[in-house]
Length: 435
Ligand SMILES: [Zn+2]
Picture 1 (cartoon, rainbow, N blue to C red):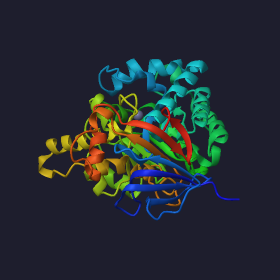
Picture 2: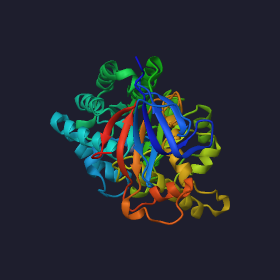
Picture 3: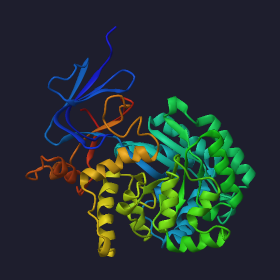
């Protein structure tokens, strides 16, 4: 029997794992029945597919699926609610709402809306924090499963310094995590993963952090948490973990750093701690939109990249006000310019739009340990990709044929690019009307 091969024809732009970019104005993406890419390159002379999707209008692009390396699903309805900096915002906006997730109906409604909105914006992979509630976390997994999205998800582990209804004993936290990991880790051939998720050092005791580190190591699970996001948070965390030499050291002592760990923000990291992060191959989620919204600070993206750290982009909704990774790409570029303004003595070029695309796709996959599977459109990878167009009213700019200008047009659109369709493992998980 003939193999069922889908061929998508149009302009393809993708970073390449070996460096450089694939940019084919008449390109072909060939996806087999198993959802893997068999070919990505020029259309002329390419192997033929059994079915062909022509996607060739002048504003159309075929891109890798976007990867959001740090986001909070239950906070989705809380976007754009400023209430002062991080600790005030957590206390006044976030924790009161997360406490309501003992309500399974609310948890399901929010999770369903969250994943649907992410796919609609072109995000095909996410690293997700749930609340402390085991049932709400299981519902979050269930909605991710049904939506078709690829996700790492974890119950937020909290055992101190939060409202009583969000604070669980170490024993309960660990029992919940064990049951959730057993039920959901590697479901659908690894499309879903359980991610060990200590909320942040300010709401976890030394014992809970150590138990999380042990559990992750024994079960070979990914880890996500927050690191050095805000100045007041640094003081608070130090006061709770005075045995440690600094914020990074708290996690290092708990065995929570390593190649399977991704830490969000990492704005205030001394050089010696950067060495600890780099030596342990800990990855970072850069969340510039959130960092600006919560007035947290500006991460030294270029400096960290020069140290060899793996860095992806995170929307950090609801610290960030949108799930759009195109917005996060723009914020990453502008944030790097702001850093230059603040540090003229060590100015470094801000990322180009093409580099921002790499951050939001292949670099995100590397940060999550998934770059062998996704992140770029290359033969052998699983076919997570988008068909998208620049916003109509902005598509008449002159001279936008070069890769950089084309991507810049997308990134700097006043409205988000229109995602026509999103595919994960070759299966359509979002379709905007008819192609
Ligand atoms: Zn966060």
